[in-house]
Figure: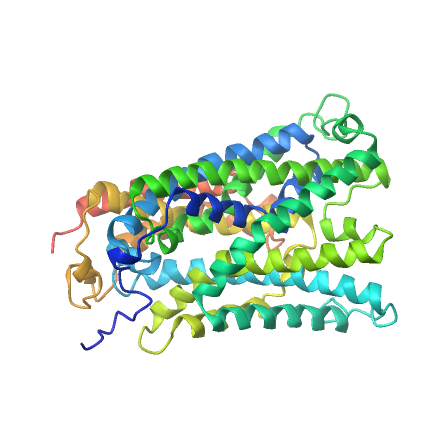
Length: 482
């Protein structure tokens, strides 16, 4: 059978016989992805920004409960038709235009891939520092901003990731089954140490909110909470789009819905609590707030404990990185040229871009981590989600012509392969958040932007999703039928 220009084995619908993921599979998937260092850092950064422990946990739980809605909605098409995310995008953006949301999602994943690879590389660096202290000495390069050894450790962990990608999807499943208990055990042990060293949960969690009356940031809670909540949604805004890459393997809609509803919010809240509690404890134990778990682990006196912890963290980070940040962009890059780019080639492209993005700079500052990185890309992904959901549930009533999704001259060709309605709705939804992003990124002075537009950026995912949803439906109603 001749392969069409819009298909390859990785992009074709999953056969019914291979759709065997049950409730436990999806719950385990989310536990595995949620139990990671960025989740820990996410919670810790909220505490570092001024929240107390329960404000941070509530913000995270609320954000993940909200983002669960588009995750379940977009997962429906994957389960019903067995199609991956970039193919699903063809229904709303066109057979060629689907490359826009696919590439945006892929580039964000490249950034996350780099962040996770940097975390794993830093764990290797800490081990080298214990075993060979003289090697750890070095001056940060002017261009990279890190030492040669740090870069070498980053590249070593990067190479391990690329080897797993080369081995294929089955090796990823094995890693996930090992990873979840490893990092959860490590997190619980870290929590137990913090509890004992800080003298119980009382001192650990007694730290007041910086936004309370009489505190340094009194009256500023809502100014921090709203973009913080948007950042929490942005954390999984990527998966809210490409969840069909996983839901296409579900045995039924019930399996993916129940499994994800049980796995995501609870797992994020639990592991975030570990991050919040340990971060709060560091201010009691060390007299300073340490939001990076790697820096906390370095304070342990026993080399054996440190090395075992770092090895466990490396394995866990590797599994999360491959599952959350390689599977989707590999498919997305494959979508660009299905005949030339395979899953493995797409994974390699993801890895190379992850290096170029210099991820150590993305996580260097907790404020930038939330307000520039997470909120910034949510301004792009929110509108994509609004368009996809409006098209699938309202315009098409969940009915897709699957053969036409792979036909360059079929009904989803629109105008030369581009859905001008989707493109215009996307642009109009992103524009209101652009001035705020430029201010946050220090490319534009705050005084040159109206306060209203600055406020819109704080709601970037919400405003982008809502505007795109409504505008897409209006334009699709007005567009001539073809």
